[in-house]
Image 1: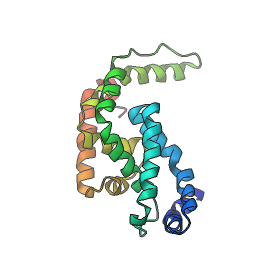
Image 2: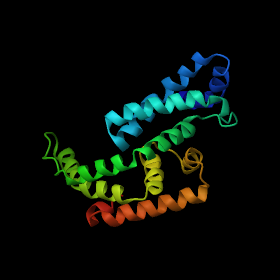
Image 3: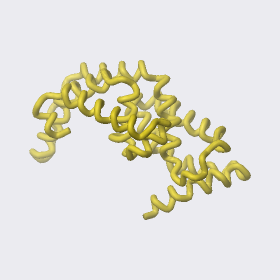
Length: 190
């Protein structure tokens, strides 16, 4: 409930920050960790620091153009971050290819179920990273905004400034390509 209330107040915070710029810090405080985490998963921790910082710098600079009819600033912020990540696309593809080349981790200590789950995830890591690297940038953006940022398709459409139908078709194609690239045993879990 608290998160819903916080998100519903985003537009009013941004509007207020036009008169009192320091109020924009509330948006930064609410969403920095999520934006940084998303960028980190896409590009690695070093590039994520830069992307997250630049996302909020751009958002602050463009806050006067924010559509105040949208109470939730998350899609707007993820859209800015996605545009910045697109600049790092080649580095992202290299990261996925490097991840695909790494071997699966050895078994971890702990209960048998946890060890088996970790081995299954390790076995999927390489093929999944290859599949992500091979996706077209637009498909990868849609898939990862849904999977990692947990945005709805409507929020992804807002974030990327795309029609909802385009988001649905890109997500469908991305999921189909990722499933096709994964071994049969893993495919069933996707």
